[in-house]
Every structure is written in structure tokens, then in C-alpha cells.
Length: 333
Image (cartoon, rainbow, N blue to C red):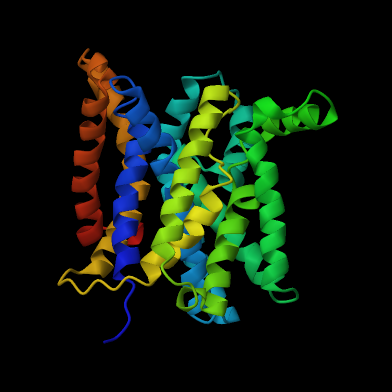
């Protein structure tokens, strides 16, 4: 029977819903522990998985110069289209935090495009484009193992955001504070994307999925370690945000291999699930911003304070819009 990657496609689809869960945090008020686990542990393995999958399939598909150009062009086109669509909502979001002059808007728009997107979830696309381009050209002259080492070093630097409370006073903390003042986060292609994209390439290049027995066991062990790390950080109160965990690296590695070696022969259209995962990821941000605006117009904005209502009010219109895009607006997918 021909090998398939249906488990990875299914996980991409599930992951799109986990992203919505992270951004709507439905359980944080009612059941804080469940909210923390769903949003700051389970939800934080999604983007590493996406990065590894992108690196894996890019490498698996024989990355010739022609394929590289075609792949990156598609990513850039999709990213720019959605970035333009999100500009009004990004402006509305920023106006809620600070006053922006025309000069700041011009500078901020450029920084947003190259760093974190015109709306906050679009950072992934900017990071993916950067990481793919960096890894592709690096591997033309150097080895995949050295790329992994560089990625690990950069990821460790990125972890300063999560382990901020442990940074001693001095030049390192001052320098890091200056960086945060300019770029807000280390969650980008440089400090986050390179490691996971290179991991995906490494798995594909060396057929690692065929060499590791019972990867599910390792996934389980490292997920428990990830939970321990996350709750320890939470109890110590050291994090600016929970984007980076050390244990997410080995967990994501074995989790992806587990999925890559799982054969699902269900009579589903897994290609559709894969496509829907992309559309849901891009489109859900519209309703994160639009729903509270509409509720405020009708003076019922307080409904959005309910976690479950917030989840449902974003999820349902996202699914409807995703169906419309999938079938009628092809340039958005």
C-alpha cells in the first residue's frame, strides 16, 4: 500500500482550530488551569509543527532552484494579499493601544511586513518565508547539522522572552530590553523559524522517520516534560510570554515523526483538510477583531467577555468564510 501523510494533513486541520483556541482563550477565566494547558501548552506546539511540516515537504519535494522560486513566490503572494486585507483591522487593533502618527504608521507598516505581519497571527508567514529562504541558501554551502546548531543557538536566545525573569541585571538584559522595544518579541523567523524548518529538512534529508522506533513513546515523555517546564515557568512568573519552551523542540521532533509514520486510510479528502487548515488560519483573525466591534455597535460587547461565547462567535463565522474562500475565492488560498 502506498505511503500517505494523511495523519499530518489531519493534524494541520486540528491545529488550525487549536490556533483559534489560543487566540480566544475560552477557559482562562472559568477554569484557569485548563485555560493555561489549552492555550499555553497544547496551543504552543502548533506553530513548531507547521514549521517542521513546511521544511519536511519542501526538502522532500527536491528543492531545485525552480521549485524554490515557485514555492517562495506562492508564500509571498499569499502573505501580501492577506496582509493588505488585514491593514484596517491592524490599524483598529493598534489604535486601542497607542496613538499613531503618519510617520509611525509608515515605519510600523514596513516593520510589520518584515517581522510580525499587519495583524498579529500573520507573523507566521513572515517567519516561514524568512526561514525557508535562509535555510535554502545556507544549505547550498554548509551542512544540515551546522544549520541545526545555528538554529538551536538562535532558539536559545529567543527563549530569553520566556525566561526573562532569570536574566541577571546588566548588559545582556539591557540589550535585550532594547531589542524588545524595537521588535516586541523574539517570535520570528530568525529566533523561532530557522530551527524548526531545519528540523523538518533534516528529517526528510536523512529519512529519520524510518530510523526511529516507537516515536509515540518519546512524544509522550517529552510532552510531560513540556508540561512540567510550562507550569514551572508559570509558578515562577518569569515569562513575558509563553512562545518559547525548550521541551517543545524534542516533543515537536518526535511528534512529527509519529504523524509521518502513521498511515490513515480513511475515505476522507485529506487534501481538502490541508487546504482548509491554511484558510482557517488566515481568516480567523478577521472575526477576532470584527465580532467585538459589531457587538459594541449593538451595546452588547460584554458578551465577548465570555470565553465560550468568544470561541463560538469566532469559530462559526470563520468556518463559513473558509467554505466560501475554498469554493469561490481561489486567490485567497
